[in-house]
Length: 347
Image 1: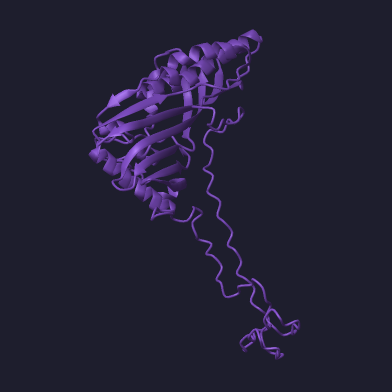
Image 2: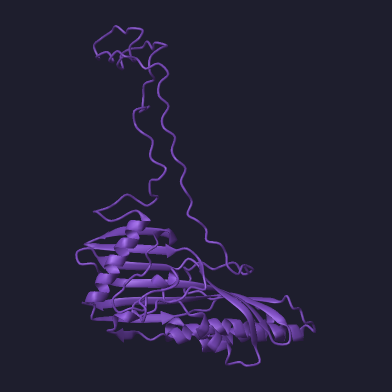
């Protein structure tokens, strides 16, 4: 499927160039700033980027840091006397407010009610995730560590699984050329209804591309958001969303390493694979291009007793920004999103 993904990325670049030139010819103009935007997403629930977002490498949006909750304000005059008992009708002027049957409130008494001034304020460093449930991790670093543990165990024990991979095209906006692109794009990628369900027994086809390493990402600061949810019946679900990264490289089985962070979890596409596809059209020159992986998300459901994954979903959006040249320079932008689902595991 990697070749299909490479063709999809290349098709976005090449078709944008050819069709934008045709549009220019039809308009009897040659506008070097003509920009064609194509959005490719998986399903109706996926987020669709804005059509005019032509940012080549958007900066990663850091997770918002919650403001610390201010500590409760202590009473101005902290009385030293213990509160009167319920049947005590005498209220000393220096005592704390009497029980509910006392109608007199001394001016020096500490405020009554729910002012728990002795309760410390929560720390500003507290994780934003939900509290732990049944011992599941909550901090992003701990969730990444648990994901690594689960995936390593899964690859060590798995004997068979099903894998399906596809790309979907929607929301094209190319003016008069839109119908032409709709007809051509499916030739360069696999739609969901045409994707084969592959019977696999090789662990390296579960990303990243390794027989034994289930996760090669070790930097928790690269995790944009993380959660570990108790599903009941001994099942839990981990969701990881990564920070954005430009031109990441995939995991290398020969060196058992990856020069990128996204490639530690996802099956990234090498730049050279795209160049090889584009090079097949010799009349086109690629001045430059950037592939920005944004909000790549993996969801893994696993058995908490043995760390065996039962189902996985990968969503990998790639924002393409390319400068091409044929008779004149054209900037082509768009988004290609690869989707992988893995299930029916046998151990």
